[in-house]
Image (cartoon, rainbow, N blue to C red; front, side, top):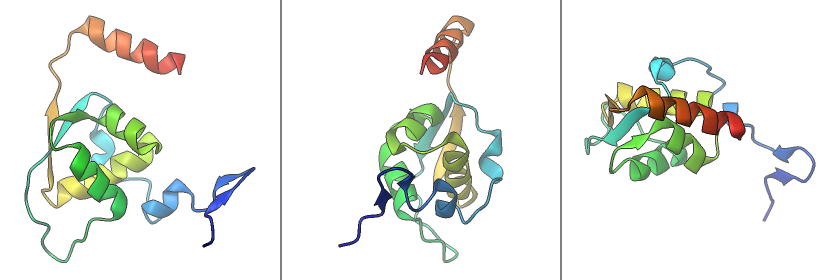
Length: 115
């Protein structure tokens, strides 16, 4: 079995390949604290979610932030936004806003900067 890893370069298939080289989608407006929830809708119109999108759908059975999704998938935020945009376009997820205070948002930003 061939491994899709290169010890020095990392994954052979770069994250942008997961999204067909696209850099923009309807998910561009998502911020880190947007809460994503699966709608339970069955895909239609011939759309078949990819493996990463299937994983997203399982992660968002309960409301999950965009930041947590990107972290759990270990993918760049831009890639996750495109994947989420596709799922949203097909009505497989809903997007909500977290009810957070300014203090909590500052703590999140400071925590992300510390990474």
